[in-house]
Length: 133
Image (tube, rainbow, N blue to C red):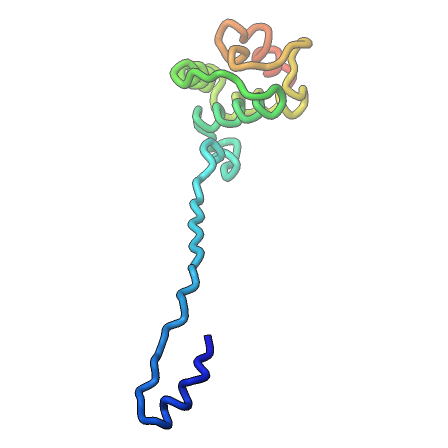
């Protein structure tokens, strides 16, 4: 706002009235970066995978091919720990990769789920794949 009377008041010896401009609002944006859980295996060689890496890979592939699934983390831990112990790290990873990268998440015309990695499915799933590899 321009005060046109300021020159007249200054000539008359009056002190000028100083007004502050209204403050403009400052927009502040906060960006939070959260790490993607379950993606550590992407930075590792297949030989270095743990059962958690195998679980994260398999669950990510299941979601990618068949959509979100109900999860039971305790059951998944038992399944993938056992699977890694039965087949050893490199073979277990190779079986999982074959199942999703070569078979596109399907085995014997059925979607691959977590239960395919259970001990009871070994003769029909993991053992057959292991012989192919």
